[in-house]
Length: 360
Image (cartoon, rainbow, N blue to C red; front, top):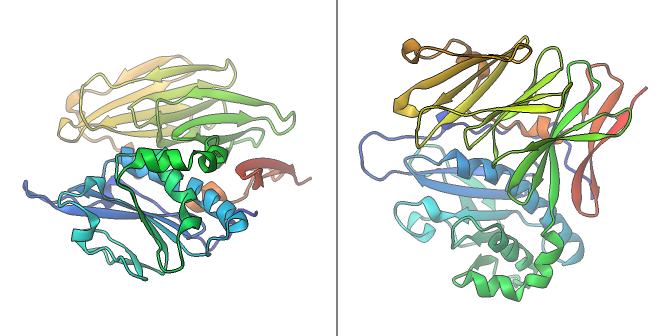
């Protein structure tokens, strides 16, 4: 199998600002459609007024994992080469997707709810409708069941997920250790490569020395990434953040990590991280609670918090969106700044891997 590397694949960015939030207290259905880099797997998520990032972010990785399984099924199990639409109605304020007009016929559609965004027309496809809360094993069971569908039936909707999953445990087993690599980010001097490792709902980072081939783990995150990992300008430090509102700074020289958490309690916080030279800015945003803003000098180990009434910091606009995922950068070959190496994607035993190749 070959990974999809076409530069024609559009970058896909998802941000809180792109999700419609309606005034008032009435229920308002919002939706988003997340597409794999190949354009063959889609996930349609729904929510009431908004879709939380802790649902959106996992789906971005999950569609790529499902695409790997789709390719394996296509090669060995004889499914048709149709797109796959996964519908997660768990956030719907009005009940099942059937009541919202999602097509059950030959033409599949992804909906954006009452956001005013036009319907995503997918065409003839396989449909998987999730019936329970986010259970990756249930989704895997539904994927491996696709070859069981007849040519006239292309929809899987399960009432008793435990029985359904148990009946396909043998087919699920090869995918239980599914591990995918994403998002290669070179150090400013091109001597080290940072990349993301996804393992069944958890994300961690690894730092690779292409000369020796040695890898260093940066320590686990408590969930998914809230901000793309980034290097300080001098290439010594790496900063990254989780959806659980932790900001971590890894020192490549001492191989130690310092962790920062918000002091204020808020049910919903979003995290921004920005390097300016060797100075790190980061902020936790809690909606009506406002910003909790910090500056950190990792060389001196000095942390400063801005005054609570300082308002929105100017660097927030330079940091960009709350959370963005550039699919082209994440799944395409990336040259090192010196031009000495290139990071490419390969498939090994059905697993998506990053390899570093010398160019000189």
